[in-house]
Image 1 (cartoon, rainbow, N blue to C red):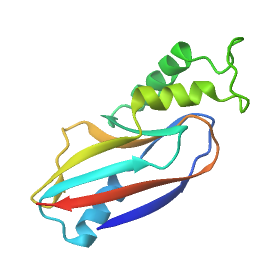
Image 2 (image 1 turned 45 degrees about the horizontal axis):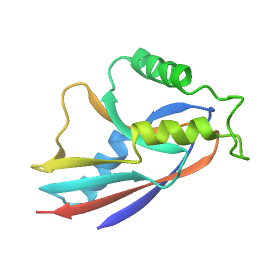
Image 3 (image 1 turned 90 degrees about the horizontal axis):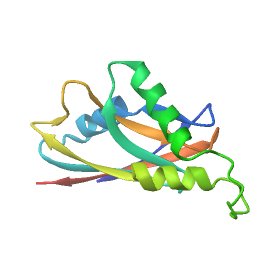
Length: 133
């Protein structure tokens, strides 16, 4: 089973907690045990798992990525001008594999699944593929 979700990002770079959407989909499908692969369908937006208790973690995360990959660099040649976004996705990754156990995502106390926008705002999609077992 699988589903594509849509979302609208509102900022140039942001992290959107999608944990509840993924968990709700798993419950609706009656998934008890297996894995859920959560994938961004874009080259300038990724998926990560990180702390979802303190909003400053997202702020710091995005700031640090901006420091490592500044938006403008005099030697960048990509004509769209979003080389930094491509590099950020390659660092963060475009997907995460999540364990589903006893009908729930197996996440630590402070963990959440994030859609990471690096070239917004835009209409975006992420996909969830479930493998039961």
